[in-house]
Image 1 (cartoon, rainbow, N blue to C red):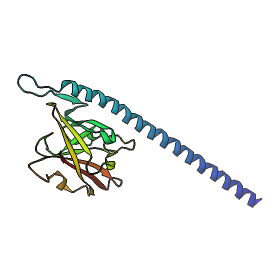
Image 2 (image 1 turned 60 degrees about the horizontal axis):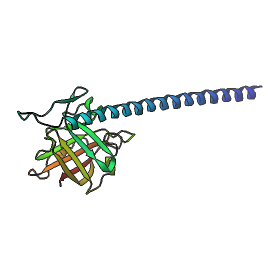
Image 3 (image 1 turned 120 degrees about the vertical axis):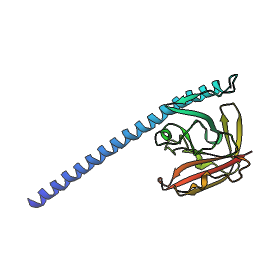
Image 4 (image 1 turned 90 degrees about the vertical axis):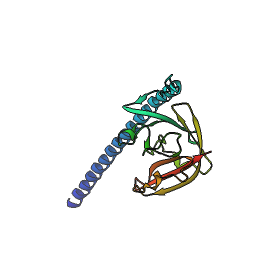
Length: 200
């Protein structure tokens, strides 16, 4: 009788554990589904902003560029990488909040100006934002459009990982040229993946 009770208790515990695991799996699936759905909705909103930028790239009679805003942040340009089907507006500053919305300027670099323009973006699981830049190789092209309508092509020349405190990524390799540096997380946010490119 005692052995039979123990076996019944084991089966009951196994069933409870199985039920808990199934519930956890369902919660994870729903949560991941919501995150992906929110990212896809954000990407749709970003496409509208890209269209708005392309329609309004012009200067007025005083030479002022159009002021375009996305969810509270000024848009200062566009980035396009055809190899990985990437096209996003560039937001003026990097904050925890702005990084959830689009690609952001990290530091004070000028869009298509001489020097190093650093751009930061999350590496989302659905390959949005900078989720696919790990596929870039030397020789690949990055197009940056400023709000004057100038499009500059940059060619990738370096790719490496570094620690999050490495501020050397902000420095220019050649201060007389236009450069772009892409920054995203890697290795579970322990490192940073760096892609460096220079004007073609």
